Amino acid sequence: MQYKRWPLRNQVLGLLFGLLLVCSGTQASDNPRVLITTTLGEIEIELLENLAPLHVERFLSLVDDAFYDGLIFHRVIPGFVIQAGGYTKDLEYRPFERGVANESFNGVSNARFSVAMARLDDPDSGNTQFFINVNDNDFLDAKRNKPGYTVFGRVIAGKDVVEAIELVDTHLRMGMAGVPEEPIEILSTIKQ
Image (cartoon, rainbow, N blue to C red; front, side):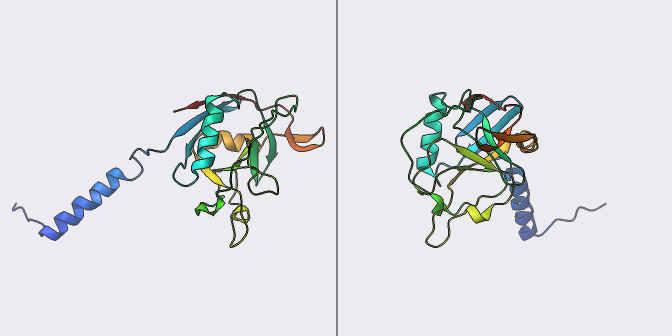
């Protein structure tokens, strides 16, 4: 049998295609990551430092201070969001006074499994509370002259844990809707 050689152009294209397959999905990101350990399992998030630097800096500072440890997912709305970062199991608010400037015009959408900062009507009132989108919630994105909710990260592992939290039974407690009947506590947050 005689060996037939590919034309040089096909060899180069094959090599480039092979490199693309090897590199896609396996190349390590330089973005910081945080492992959130909850009573239902672990969620790992990648932080989008270049797109929301103020929010990432705030979040990492709170992680370093163990601020989130012992807090719960206090707002769970199936098909919308799971939210944490403000309340203990007894629904006591853990105060933090400084807000962070809105960065929602960064082009990152509130897509499923993205992580965004909760806020009040004031666009610059993001503080400590964050939510994980469990649906594509593009209506939360910035519009032409209207700030949205800043996405500063995305879930890269533990999506099954996010879905498990989304589906827990909730009730109205102390005037707050969507509070899980069995508290889902954040046991630890650790930079990876």
